[in-house]
Length: 160
Image (cartoon, rainbow, N blue to C red):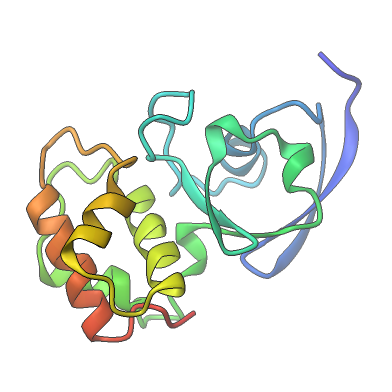
């Protein structure tokens, strides 16, 4: 374990300082230190996508990203998508398409979809399938997830 250092993070547009081991995972710091529990622990090795956040706009699996790599960068979590009571278009589309059952993977799926739509405002079905492939849903709601991403594109899913 490395000696704790003060790490400056920008999460959902807000600055935070955390004194922690710089080799801890970004996921641990978000959940345990900043109490942002929307991002979920799934596999712990960056293979399931439950922990997806955006770092400088790029989909990032926070369980396999050490906090020092995220220092000073723009981190967006599921908690930072809605504006007041207004859901982000991707969140709205997931609700409208009923794209979840247990909901455990949903935050990571939504963050992955946001990253896709910020890069490609109108992805085709194959692009959606390829992009969302690293995200695992144990309930197997993949057709509804793909429908939600398509719906989000229709209603402006790339909006911040």
